[in-house]
Amino acid sequence: MSRRQQRSDRVRAFSAYLAERLLRLPQAAPPMQDAGPGALRVASYNVHKCVGTDNRFDPERIAAVIRELDADILALQEADRRFGRRDGLLDLAALERDTGLRLVPVAVTAHSHGWHGNALLVRNAEVMAVHRLRLPGGEPRGAVAAELELPAGRLRVVAAHLGLLRRHRTQQVAALLEHIASAEDMPTLLLGDLNEWRTGARSGLRALERDFDRIDFGPATFPSGLPMLGLDRILCQPRGLVSGLAAHQSPLARMASDHLPLTARLDLSAAGTAVLAAAA
Image (cartoon, rainbow, N blue to C red):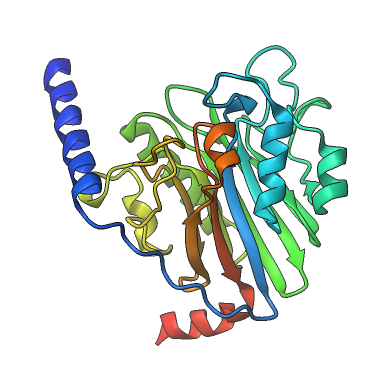
């Protein structure tokens, strides 16, 4: 297939997706479940290197949105500068003081917040293990996996920012699944900017369907001013632990980054029930 034909196919697929988004009624999010003793608020946010839709670099504005989220587990993408020392962009001491969120130590340099821009912040959690994952593809990409001890039990959190090309996303998803399959069995939360707007057979995320929640559902988070694409995802295995997926659409969030934050409720207390239901 020629490059011209490939571009034409991508344009047609994207146009069909936009038509579907614009013409159909907004899809309702799964209902928020009653908060049990293991309920956590989780969120994913591509902070766009703290550059807002007004092209202004403003880390404090991003920090204000993070305070709005009130998350117990927060994955950030593009949290470091791209070049040079890859310095982190946020005032972590102020964030911890204001929110109780602590940075999981995934960076390999003293000045960075994350690994390939992926940072992970948690509240009231003990970090048992951290893994930095190099993802395949034509551009440098990575993911982080942290095993946490929480009051309601253990949880693996995998935070990722996948590539721009579908074939690379397919390879990266395979690498994430390989890591999860080789690790200790425990509930696993996968969240981040997965850069996939396609649904159905053309989605680069299809391999996740075997173990994770419904991958075709994702509230629109991009672009933040007029969100039409569900690029950001929060998924969990076993199924049924995540509810209330929603894009955080405060006036500040619409301005602070080109992505809206994605939030959800994670109920770890339901993990045992979900495993029994899947085995039945």
